Each structure stands twice: as C-alpha cells, then as structure tokens.
Image 1: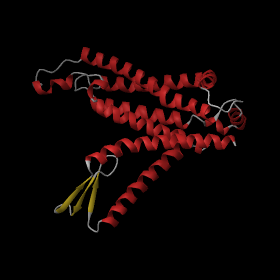
Image 2: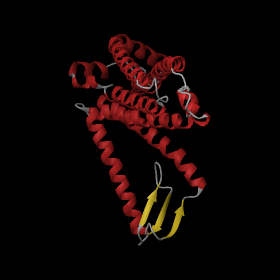
Image 3: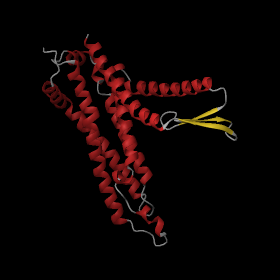
Image 4: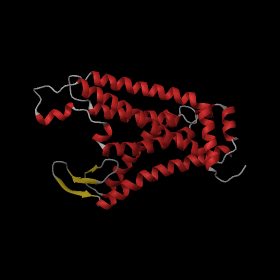
Amino acid sequence: MNNQFSFSRALLLLRKNLKENGKSYLLMFIAGFGIILLIYGLLIVGSFHNMFPTGDRKMLFTIGLFLGGTLFSASFYSFFKSQPKTIQFLLLPATTGEKLLIGFILTQIVYIIVFLVSFTSIDWLMCTIYNEFVSIPKWIIEQEKHYYKAAYLFNSDTVLIKEILVMYFITTSIAHLGSLSFINNAYVKTVILFILTVVALMFLNNKMLGLMIPEPIMPHGKYFTDSFRIGDKHQPTGIVILPSNWHTIIAFFLPIFIYVSCWTMSYLKIKEKQI
C-alpha cells in the first residue's frame, strides 16, 4: 500500500463507511430530529398565550448540538469493542491520516451540517406556526410587542451562535479523542475526565494567583481569567485587567490550540493502534 496520503482513497473509505453504517446514522438522525421537533412543538403549544420561548429555544439548540454531537463523536470508534471489527479497521488499505479524515468529516462537517439544516427547518416551521396563530394581547405595551413576534434563531443572536459553534468543535474533538482512548463507556469516562480537568485548572489558576499576590483576590472571566479584583469585595484595593490585545490573542489562540491538539493526539492514537 502507498504510504502517502490520498484524498481520493479517503473518499472511497468514507463511501464504504456510509454504506456499512448508513442505517445506523439514519436511525440516529430520525431519533434526534423527532425529539427536537417534539420538544420544540410542546414549547410552542405552551406559548400560544405567552411570549415566544426564545430562551428555551436557545437551550434546546445548545443541548441538541452538544449532546448529539459529543455522543456521536464519542461512539464513532465503538467498534473497537469487537476484535474482528478492530482488526478489519486496522487492516484497511489506507494511511492513518486517511482513516482519521473519515472521523473528521463525519463528526466535524457532516453532523454539524445535518443538525443546522434540521434545526433551521424546525425553527422556521415553529416560528411560522407561532406568528400565524398567536395574536398580541391588546393590553401589551408597544415596547413589549416584539416579544410576541417569533424571529428565526440565526437572526436573533448571531454572536451567541458563533460561540456555541466554536465550543461544539472543541467538545466534539475531545469526545472523538475519548472514543479512541477508552474502549468501554467512552462517553462517560471522557465527560468525567473533562470535568475533573476543568476543575483542576480552575483550582490551579486560583492557587497560582494566590501565590503571586498575597492579598484576597477574586478572578473574573468567561472562559479564562481576564481580570481580578484585589482586596475585600466590600473594600477592594484595586483591579487588574488583562490588556485588550492579550485577551484577543488568548481568545483566538486557546480554542485553536485545544482543537489541533485533540486531533493530533487522535492521529497518534490511531497510529499507535496500528502498530
């Protein structure tokens, strides 16, 4: 076998994967689509005399995207539980990169496209139903009437959606790595390890700040510490803020570093199994 990467050979492997697992993927899609449609429908029915459930819709979108995506990614290599299937996969006439590309395409491209198209279709249907059947009560003041008008999700909060999508790519890459690292209960083990890692990093971050500054401090930040208050919360003695250019660099560099690291380790994991 040629050890050089071939995109055409990778596409043949993808076609083979879809042929073998197409029914399973279709059942997963039908189940996920049905659950989201049912829950969204119940939210709309419960809102026929109330404001449009904007917050509940965002929660449904986020949970569906993260839960479905990470479950799919974490179960992608579940066939490693079967020795014959493992041997069959490892003996495929393809390079490590080509085998990894299949997982990348299905978990990072195909799933997100299918989910976004499905949710957008359901969102359009439900917004149309709400706007058609819900009338604004006469006692509602003019400033609050927009709460009774359904706007499509991707038109209402694009900044939040972008943040969610970035987090999706990071969490699914971690789940994909977990599916290669753990043979049994990969999803549960990956989630537990992820939570422990986050808690440990937060603890170490606060400890290191405490060692650097011998006064009471209160870190602040959305995904990482971008500022911290010095002194008692009732009488703070000062506030340290990360320079804006540092914040931009870290916010850009950190997700890319985590993402590339996970896929690099996934590559090494597959290569290790082949050896």
